[in-house]
View 1: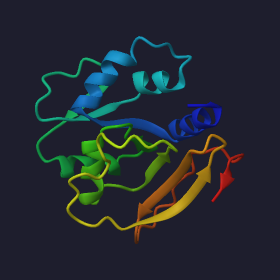
View 2: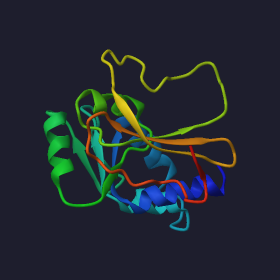
View 3: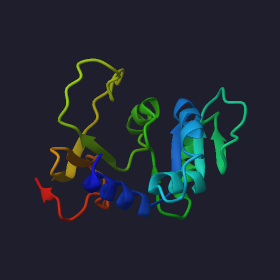
Length: 171
């Protein structure tokens, strides 16, 4: 993480007014973010934005404001997307990130591709059984070697806003 990446995160946050996360990410974030002050941009955003938590097993959502989504998830997410407002951020939540494009719920996928090879761990699109046709709509190479890539589903008319600072080089 460096200043350029922080600026990209801040730009993405400024274009958003809600968070969509899964149960595990919600529980992890609920332990980490509430104790951080509003001077941390991500903490301020997460602590004060509505959180929509996809979970069939969570008993309560104590980190507020939060609404649990269960039952017909696709219908509920489609209704949520139709509400007025800015973008909905999905920070983390790899299982949810896999679910969204398979069910036609993904408008834009922003990836930060880091120049580090770990060789093990969770893969973003593990267990994806159908092809996801995406088009690259913007890319940036940051000074630390991270590639910021913005994709939209092929055939989408979405005009995604770019999160990375204009000072970064475009690919």
